[in-house]
Length: 163
Image (tube, rainbow, N blue to C red):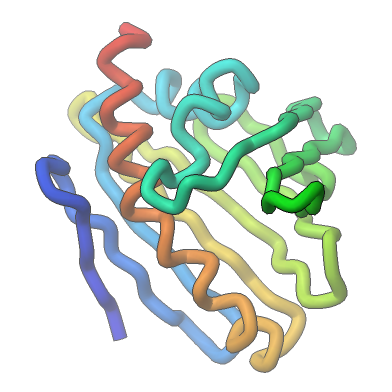
């Protein structure tokens, strides 16, 4: 089943599809060349501008990205009351400007995430896929894709500033 949603004012819908018991795929078109969209995913100063959905009020305390095969990433969020939450893993594929893949190692439920950037007529067709180790892991984490329409709308707003 494919669900489409988009925050008000966004140009393109974001589709979310559960492809199998273990995989969820999110698709979106951006009106920018693949090299710019890829850059927004791989440069920390750009990534931090759009990755956190503004509506949830979460504060990104720190972001580290070493975008190369074997390099890592770490995002730390402030949960209030002196509590933090970290997401981290390693990049397994980095092919500018067409493909990124990384592990999510913060729990045993961690998915392998793959993002492809396919340029057609100056637009980027982005596919974001998360493959979980089990059906139960996907069931527990399927909510993590709920913020992507807002995140992608924030990315869409950032891209014209990068031209």
